[in-house]
Length: 158
Image 1 (cartoon, rainbow, N blue to C red):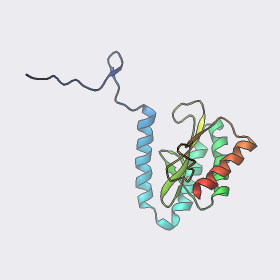
Image 2 (cartoon, helix red, strand yellow; image 1 turned 30 degrees about the vertical axis):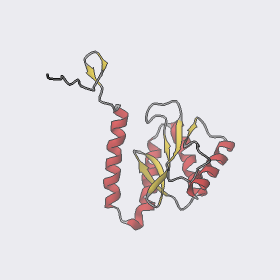
Image 3 (spheres, one colour; image 1 turned 120 degrees about the vertical axis):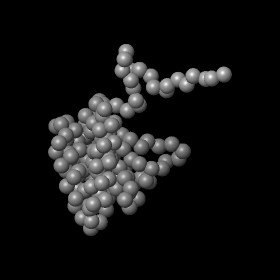
Image 4 (cartoon, rainbow, N blue to C red; image 1 turned 90 degrees about the vertical axis):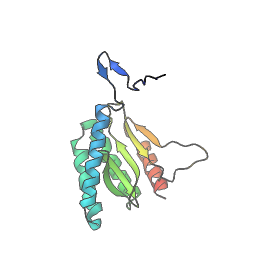
């Protein structure tokens, strides 16, 4: 008896194959690979300055709605946790502690979502019982939102 193996790939549309990643996801992975190569060539003493230049350049490329929020988030993160090192992560602004990404900003245009996101990795000290949020939608920034971001970043950075 022989079994016929079926492919796990389905079709997204008649004649088209879906491989599991969107064009935006593939682009983000390529950006991340380039970021890793660039970081490996940098001298450790210049990582923070070079990382900040990269982050500011990426923010400058964003559309106006994302750029306004990203610029403000960048200022808030720098003020709340000045020891964090700015860097790019999958083509988006991020801030690391001890070489690991602690928090990141994701522009809404990146994956064509309806809002930008401020996310935190498992490195962030935000534990609150058995369950807590690790990403926050940023449709706009208000004074209350800015204060909450500052408090979250301070807590996350420990």
